[in-house]
Image (cartoon, rainbow, N blue to C red; front, side, top):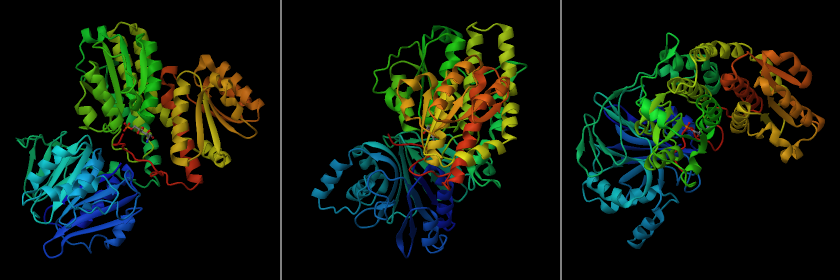
Length: 610
Ligand code: AGP
């Protein structure tokens, strides 16, 4: 959601900014812009609505906007329509200060009134323009001083890149509740919303903390805390391969990432299983703290929340501790019952989702211990947690998550088995069997991915449906939620996921001739019950795609219109296998409908506004 890139150095900056913004495209946006300083031309601002290609074209691939210092932005509209006036950079009245911003300035109306009363004329509908105008109001020849004054007046979430035509030897970056990273180069320095925009130029980065301000020149980066005291930042080396954030011959990132799942699951579990034993060195939680836990909250949004739904079945079954799964955006407002004996398991691919971060901080404030499952190393959620278990999925670029979901599940299995062992809830034999099954998951996932033709064929039959239902019981229901979300996100087909037994309490009224129902029947002991639900919808005219394990392959094919069979697996690990046909089905349906799969409409990869 919105992307920022900034550069100061010796190279022509515009192509670097455009390249960085292109690498941030996946975050989601609807317009883009640049502000570049040139000694003769001053501060040049170019903006373009729509895809980034429009900005590449408007600047003649960056060549038409010379200069060696500047900032760029991709905007996901919040305040004001996505047009050239509302796009960033936003400039001050005189045109000498330009600002790019991620987040929301919550008190912008009050500040706007204040400035208008002083005669400032606003050009846009954005909250961001207030920052540019306020900076000019406080600017008396010292940009850092003006920034410090503005920070005392603005409220909300922000990552800011600020350039001033009167101080072209430096630019300023600020961060509060919105991600921003500083990249250390030789003869240049950079900022970006995330590392994907930086790794072609530098792998040495520092993560800004909330309230910190960075002043970047060609040869130095000085960071200050919120009281403007200099701070020394740790420099972290990023070892992600650039190719991991490129399509590598695939038509879409989503398909590439679906195919990468066996490797990603392997990378997440292998280093943590030694001689058949799970070793989670990263955890700081003591045996005593573990024994005292009387409640677990899983807090997350979207697909990460769906992992949480599956985690509830797994953790409760193994640990016999009550688990509540909370939508992060609701958690804070639900007066949650949290004590020192509560563990909050916070799940997030990006580690920057603002709803999740806010809920996590609330859980912490109320006394919970925070254990996060995060993919992006060094992200805010990871840094603020008591314990972090990283998923080793590598960069996930497609908006619709696939490999991050799968690796989150893998971490949940590791965690559940490790805790169950430590709490004496599993005997040695049960533990060994489950660990061995876990180790087989990448291979079984690969077996499904080796035969995508069938799913592609089903997609070709059903891609024209306008309404699709997913049903399942127990952990299958959690997978149904994810299957439905994947389909909605990228194919724009209306879809609902229901606990199969719940359908007849209302939703079954929507089933009519030709309605497609995807029935997830992997949980072997509930197979017959699920088949009864299949009969109910078929009796009302539904077409049914059924998913079950090899054990029930034969029976399944007699009950449904289209059968998808997955390898036999312990029910605890079902989501990892069942979700793959769901992802592929959504992918092929979206492909056949001509949708923009990697950049679905209205969506952002990392949701950094509440
Ligand atoms: C998944 O396909 C979605 N794009 C979305 O629901 C996502 O899972 C959610 O926004 C949470 O993101 P996070 O894992 O980065 O916190």
